[in-house]
Length: 308
Ligand SMILES: Nc1ncnc2c1ncn2[C@@H]1O[C@H](COP(=O)(O)OP(=O)(O)OP(=O)(O)O)[C@@H](O)[C@H]1O
Image (tube, rainbow, N blue to C red; front, side, top):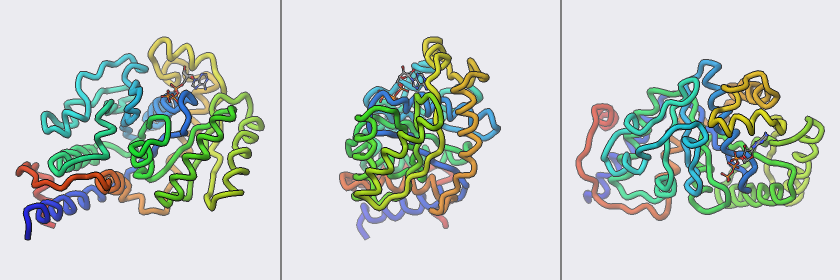
């Protein structure tokens, strides 16, 4: 058996070991920039954490990674150093409001989809470590439909599309749904309308997207609610705080708490217990992944996985 093949089998065993915990993995996306993806990712993460679940927020917006900045934190290191084997996930995670673990990735997020075998082992080690510590992984993604964005989104068990009432938001969301459906066989999308003034208005925006999807695609869209346009959210951004933390009684915060409550009921038909393993698996199945023999790096948990 070749060294590369042996390495691949070992990696497969390690990936399987990630499947043991029932972790929800949710990508926040939308196609268009500025619709509020990062605001939703942060506030939903903090609202879920306030309900007692353990949450990690992966900042995979490699264009304008800014979760840390929006929360007044400073990332010294990112997932890039973890992939290089320089440190562990624990060393780079920041502690956000309500104990949300923030994983800064910046340009490392693009690299997540193009890993050589040494880096694959680093990624699996990192998520193996994470799987013991969280119940929910929320992934904030970049705008656009670049391949790296699509791969991160399609790797996630649940997809939450953020829309707002602008024609380009609808067309960009449609473009994203189409490519996720046709190239990645995704059929189910949850839709959140942001910056709406009322539920009827939000439903109208949702119906515009559903109308065009029904005409051309076989996908299922679920309306999960709306976040009102809220000056308190803008104020909290200026203070580098999550609105659910700074103004928990504001209109947008109440909507985020409602959404957080719903999220625990989003049990995917696609084996929720394997969501984290699926996430890592999909990132690693990139066509551009190079196969090179990995250096022998083992943690005790990987040794356990190898023995299975
Ligand atoms: N519900 C809301 N009410 C008021 N302002 C909002 C709301 N949601 C987002 N915003 C504001 O809209 C702007 C864009 O939000 P955000 O950065 O979260 O969008 P994004 O989709 O992540 O952008 P990008 O694609 O550029 O990363 C920010 O100034 C944010 O404060």
